Image (cartoon, rainbow, N blue to C red; front, side, top):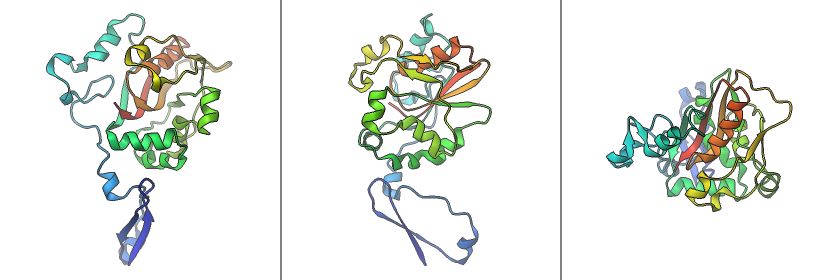
Length: 235
């Protein structure tokens, strides 16, 4: 006997063999076919102890005390030192994942958030506020949903909206230098109390870390106990 499902990305049929004993087991949801699943590369092995970047992909001169050179520079800058405790990313940002995120984020395919739901759910710790990186009103209208918020919801948790965006220019259009040197793009929502709270920021991609550090800085200045982040990809 077989059961059929369909891959959320390529839409090919996923067929699994079943027997009588399988009817008594809890069935795990399957969202990708084996071919698509195999193209998602989990981040494993030695990584930067702040941004989770795989160190094996870097030349030795770009690794200092288990940190990538980018994070060393962030931590040497007194303006940014110590705000973002740690980032964790699920997958390497390869061509396949880039296409999934593009379809999810820019073409409004909300259901693709389910692909990451199980892995994200395993990373979400109780007694932590799960805070999506906010979009500007313009971007929210264009996309129809906040992709970071959807990741939290599909993982079975409730997002906590602490921040609002004050700058609406698309980050994807900026150079690496411009991303790092942009002015503060967030502010704390009126009436929000984050004193002594552990906060986990949720976003889709860690690129330079600028967006996450801007958010972390606002929250730490407001009295948060700690700010870490979780993203789908580490580019």
